[in-house]
Image (tube, rainbow, N blue to C red):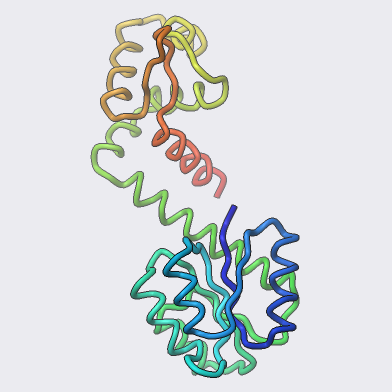
Length: 213
């Protein structure tokens, strides 16, 4: 579940956004200004920040670069009552990932959040899959099929893998299984059945999300 931080000094609007996002399935917390936002970020892993641009104390435009510098993995969507090209350009230049203008419809902000989170997920997948050793390992179609098979059906014995993938050459199957184990994508339990490692589970999810994009 994605963790969202809503930063807005308008308490009524802040509470409304928090309620709606919670109902949409997000884990939500809130802050009323830049200082409070940075305090929350220092103690809580935040996936995305909804940041109001105009607030007393440290405003959104001042807070934005500090968040990006200290927490570059967090996505940031700026909220502003002033829809101008200059303000949008300034927000993007300082690191904002998106820009939404008040008053906005709730559907708009949920869509913007989901879009930014998908972009973050895709970027993380690209980084993970672009590692040289991992790319070479997963470039082979048989190895990918083995991972997808185990993800779909759970632990598999050697002969089950060969039979379900319809590969008669057992030496070939054994070779690919060995490569996947050396890449820390497969491990065996006490019965010698193959299962995905935690890293492999993440990678298979990445491959699925990329293929569906």
